[in-house]
Image 1: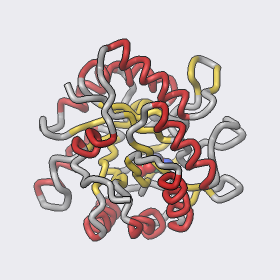
Image 2: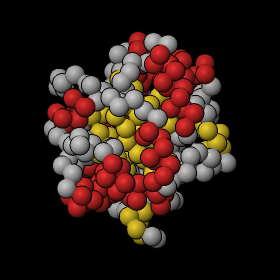
Image 3: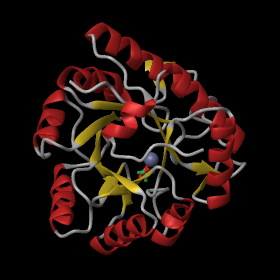
Length: 275
Ligand code: KMH
Ligand code: ZN
């Protein structure tokens, strides 16, 4: 089995201080939380930005400041930018920061009802973000909120719009997307060609049970406040690092070794880091 890669999704676009006081907003807070997650065992950080008042943002200046602070902290974690941003943002806004050439960035392979909103990713929007990823040689992580999105990505691979094998992230348990049981995860994983890698991001109460299942069947794991703010029923996690620590404990229990950053970069088909 591959060593375990853990992604920390530290703020997202939908969690605010009214929900948890532990969500980071500023580049300084985002970098500090990233470093804490890395110290806890995370190999990748999934980044969204916020304006100082917490408003979701995709501003390239904020991404650049955050990455600079992460690297200044001696942290070599794999940096992944969101191109999903927040519901309602344009493609131009969502994909602008790709010009900074992060290690990776997300590509959502379809539209999904997102709670009471719609996270719109029309074929034209997906194609445009895929093109921009190629333009800046940014390796995608393909986000799938339902099974049809896997099919779309595989079709794009056959058409040469995406390089396969690739790394996928299955988001399970969102109201509007695929359910959050281990059965749902088994089915999603069964759709991938064997040389692709995948992680699971369980939403809310699904997060840690799905992490345990992914660890058992050879997948990888994403945790963090973007997807779930609780460490146990009714108890807020004091940051995403606490959720990373919980996954590390699950991996230890299961006898699954953690990936080093070099191992993660090799599994994700990334060049070695030049800092
Ligand atoms: N905030 C969601 C609407 C991504 O980061 O690529 C989209 C999202 C996916 O979080
Ligand atoms: Zn995200």
